[in-house]
Image (tube, rainbow, N blue to C red; front, side, top):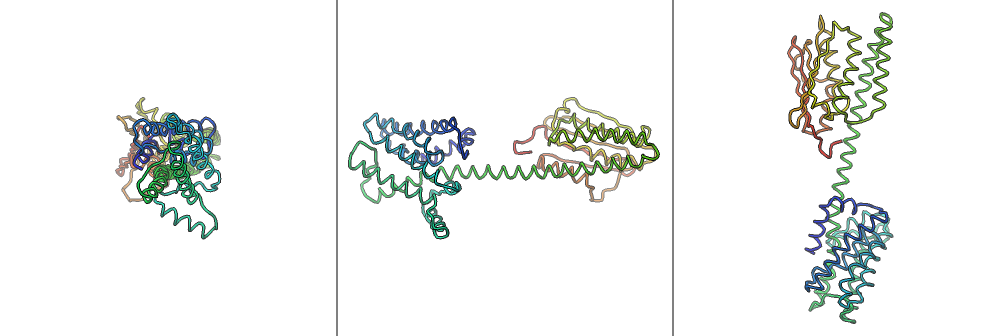
Length: 413
């Protein structure tokens, strides 16, 4: 049991093995990879038993059955062939048909199991399996895969014990002094199948939960991004509408520019874009606002670190901040003002600051749609690894600074 637990724990640390073990269906190449991994390990254990005499290394029955259960009859029978070779070299001629039978038995249970969750939930504690199987039998009048696994393993152990006792060295068996020890050996075989299934299923469940978490984060991220687009569209169309009668040419230019911006949004549905592309979008948006207010009313300044331009940021992240600076800071101010965009990369952190010298405001604890959206998108995209800081003085202006990590974690959308 200790050897099987150690083997299962070591294997699951390999990303290659995890990809292979959790596949529900495999092609021919993957079947042979699956058989090769287990065949070499189990054959090595049998070789240790044959050469050194340490019987605990022989996992031929439980190991080959497990391969058939997880891989199917073809990998199970192939591993059964590999595992039998060390014993056959010592004259154990019954090893080949017996281990192949073990692999086929596991594969047959897999083929007959409609709900694969049943054997993935097989427990090393046989009493738990009996209780669960009894509940299924009482409710559905069928023998589930857990009961089938236990009955098949006991049957295979009985066959091995009878053949080994009758024909001696033809097939390897344990030789306990008492029958109750023999029963413990049979139960150990059940445990040796249940231990790796339990270890691997825990990892499998964690992976499924992580996938669901990522999918939920992605859905939330998409919802937040889609919330910005109508908000931005409404404000730009409202600006164009106000100019239709007084300055139709300018209104027409705004609509043409808007169509170009929308075309870019529709073409690219990326969650993250390089900061350079985000700045290009902001420049297009600000050109609309400059056309609306006039170059003497709204001026734009930029200070961009070239090393920061390749860093990926959530798309449409800066637009709500720039829009707030224009609408709430510069627009109401007599004489207009300046919106300044700064970006700097400092080690593993990207620092982006949007400043304006507009009216400013007093802290009220309330935030508009745009700022709430930005804050929530940072939380969804980076968790606690990103931050946003807002400082404002009435009559002096407002500064909004965003700090995000240059490298995103693997679990982030």
